[in-house]
Image (cartoon, rainbow, N blue to C red; front, top):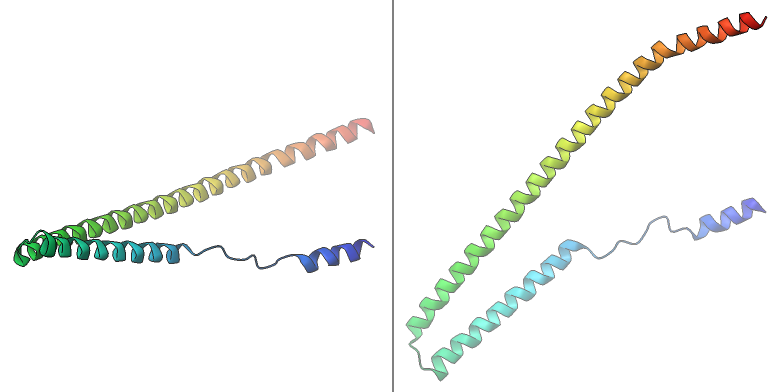
Length: 134
């Protein structure tokens, strides 16, 4: 009966849990949406300036070029900052893991050394007690 219950439970167990939404895909979608929105806004502003307000096309092109350059520089700076932060976090995590491993190794070594010293003492005490009882 117990084996049957176990088999039934194992049969319904999801060995391969479904993966959640992939983060890189979400980031890609957000980037594409932002780029499309920015392009649409720039086109609408340029059309308004040229057609409605009658600004010269040369001035509008200069302004658009400056805005695009500023946006590209800001995006590059943000990406560089994010990459640097990620690298720093990875380095810190690696250092912490190594330090913890070293500390655990030292602690285990010390404990083993203490046990090697302590075990014979316990054995001697037990032997002495047994002799005393006899």
